[in-house]
Amino acid sequence: MGMPALDLSRRWTRAEVLALPDDGNRYELVDGELLVSGTPRPLHQIAVQELNEVLRPYVREHGVGMLMALPADLDLSSDHIVQPDLWVAAMPPGGRIRRWEDVGIPLLVIEVLSPKTANFDRVKKRLRYQNACVAQYWIVDLDARVVEIWTPDADRPEIAVATLTWLPSPSVPALEFDLPALFTAIDEA
Image 1 (tube, helix red, strand yellow):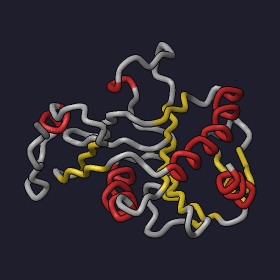
Image 2: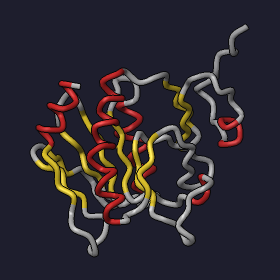
Image 3: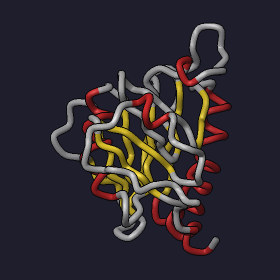
């Protein structure tokens, strides 16, 4: 017997979403709206993996925080659940993240666009990340081969085409990487 159809037109709560069965779907909740998405396409996963390989050494070497990949039930404010593809959490006092409540507001959130989630990522989730004061939100568009960089106060994104730069703190050197090389690595993987 399958799960009954979900009523996506009604307002959902965090508790209701967390009570949904672990059925292989990804459930996110922003402003009462439930987004249900299935397994991402392989190209999406390859992109997440390539970004992870670029970011992980930098985050570790400079002690910036902890790089995490989905799934996660981040709660940027009450009654929301977001599951970014990649994100960097600042280290909490004590230096360990053991519960989602330990995370706080990430320093960086990255979403790789998928056809079914692009509008949600660009509008609903972007506004949620901006309102929560996530320092940078990157939207990776594999088709356009660009990265949109959003900051909390931005009315429009900075568009990175050649080089992507991230400076999480003035006390560490900036991370810079070649976007065409990244997109080529994704294509060739």
